[in-house]
Length: 257
Image (cartoon, rainbow, N blue to C red):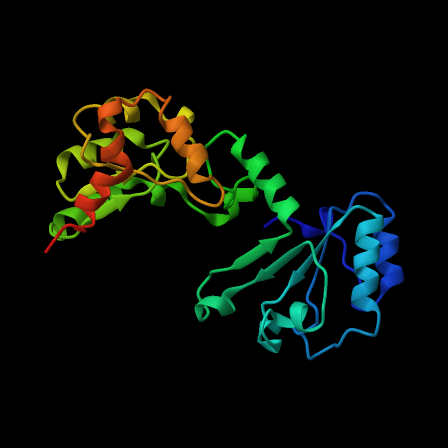
C-alpha cells in the first residue's frame, strides 16, 4: 500500500491553527473532512470551524472537500445544506447504494468544467483504479480480459452481452468474440473516437457494422463532443445511424412486440 504520510498531512478536527500551519507549507492541494467527525465516537464542529476552513482554503488556494458518507442523513442535502456549508467538492460514499462500493460526488460549476476540459484532453488508456500504486493497488489486469466473458456467452446463448469500451490492450479479443458469438456486442464508451485502435473502425465499417453501440462515458466525455469526433474518425456515413441508434435497438430488443 502507498505510504500516505508522504502525500498527506493530518490535522486535529476543530484545530484551525493547525490547518493553517499545514496549508502555509504551500504543498496542500485540498482539505478533506467530514462535517462532523463520526469515525470515532462523535465530535461536533465548534462554532466557526467550517467558516474558518472555507476562508483558509480560499486564502491558500486549496480545494475544500466535505465527505458526507455518514452525515447525509442530517436532512435534504446532508449536513452541508442543512448548516449552509460552502465546499468546492461534496462527496457521499457507499450509503447511497446500501453498502455497495458506489459513490456520488459534486463539484462547483467552474471546477466541474475545468475537470471535464482537462479530462477530455487526456489520452485514453488505463482507468485511475490502481494506476501508479504499488502492485497496482492489488488489482490484477488479467481479470479485465474480455475472453473471460466468452464462457458466459456460451453458457447463456440467449443473453445479450455488451462488452464495454474498446477493450485495449485486448481489442482483438473483443472483436473476435463479437464476430464469433451472435449475442456479444461492443459499446464504444470510455474513449474519444480519435483514439480508437484502427481495427475497431475497420470492423465497425465491415463485419461488425451491426454489433457496435454508441457510448460516451458521460459526464467525463460529453455526448456532443464524442459524436463530433465520431463523424471524423473514419466511420462510413452509412453506419453512423447503426452505431448511434439502430444497433442498440436490436441489442436491447427495444423493437420487440
